[in-house]
Length: 502
Image (cartoon, rainbow, N blue to C red; front, side):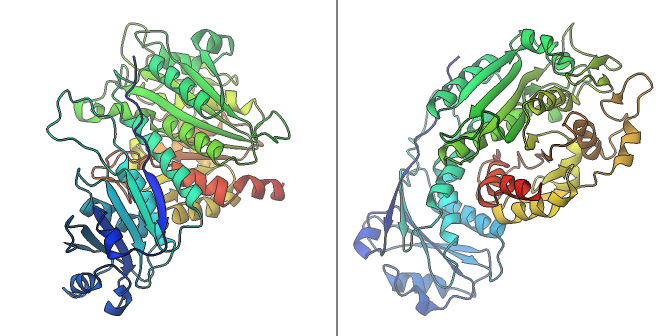
């Protein structure tokens, strides 16, 4: 089965200034300014009187957007966005998203992005991130189109070009890839087509890949993974292991392991989900999409450290061989697990994947998964939950969320929660019989499969799907986690910090 091709990324050009004639060649011009901006600060914009009139309509409110049309033959859409004096990165991205939504009808193919009126220069990076997300079309399988949708094909950056242009572009393209994969329906992205797609991505980006299918996982003792896969109609589930090795890597061992939950569709298994809870379960592989997209961005940025991605790919189906409550299975690290609820499949798949990834000797492990509804109930879909076995990392993890605009919140990780997972017949229960604190218990469960001396971060992706989008992302599927991970690994150089602290 062939997947629809990824849309091409728009071209990006830079102009020091934008004349009225150049503005007339654009379909839309977006300008972010401070909410305290004066009319005089708009004087350098083309058709400045038009912008001043737009600004003078009423007292600007932080986060608001207003628009008009310039008086050129193209009637270029002019969009003014007002940034608060102490706007956070998330608020800046959210304003960029609102401005792009205001500006971009289907026929808008060329846009200009500018910052004026006291808005910080880095606001242009937020606008560019929003534009690259807006330009990307998610998979569409309609047989007829009532209107051609060309989308944004050209972006002009006006004024000083962002110093982090390469990073912004790599991050946006990786987010687009994560959203593309996550949005695919389960009959288009099954285990076989996902495996082929990953192979193609690996070849395109200079990565190595191996596939651990069910026979290999059986030899490795990965019974927790295989228990979930047993209900599938076909024996195509497996763990994809992708490897990035920079040219000057000091060793063949990767210090970083990214682990992703890749449940291509989740029925809940024998503990069957109701209709509303099952409807969007094709997105239950978002963690694997975030992990592979992050690895590709690291390769595109040519980071100096090696990295691996381990993707746990299966469905969770009902059937005569599907695993059941009260089954007891042994994971790859020897831990025996008492199954309590078949809809807690993600932690079963991740248990073996973490254990196998841990054998490769990483210095840092990060896993991503749409793991628990409890985390969504705790945070809504505006943030995601973060856990770590290294308390000294907690503030850094929260700071990376603030800086990236993909906000996270830390939950308790105390060992006394383990008493809720004590089993009378196995080493550990898969989950508790009730749903209280399930996001915390899931993290405590997963920690058993991480080597004790390896720092580990667990991201419960509550924000993977949010109606109307989140921040600068205007689609329900958000790709949350890519910006966060790249902030942590590239900008804040967490691996270097761990090495220095060792």
